Length: 69
Image 1 (cartoon, rainbow, N blue to C red):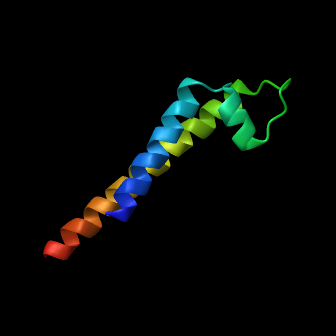
Image 2 (cartoon, rainbow, N blue to C red; image 1 turned 90 degrees about the vertical axis):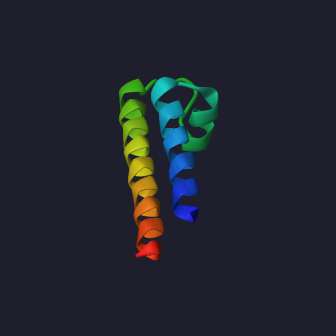
């Protein structure tokens, strides 16, 4: 259950990063300077975050299914 929750949170942050690559909140978390614009790098980071979230969700589902077997 914990892996599913962490996966959903990671997927949500990745989706937000992909949709809003230049948001002030994400720049603060990534420690990016205000005048720098790296939209292409952050879009790939958002896609990797969504992929990681999906993997964590799948691991959580498999571990839940294995407990029933």
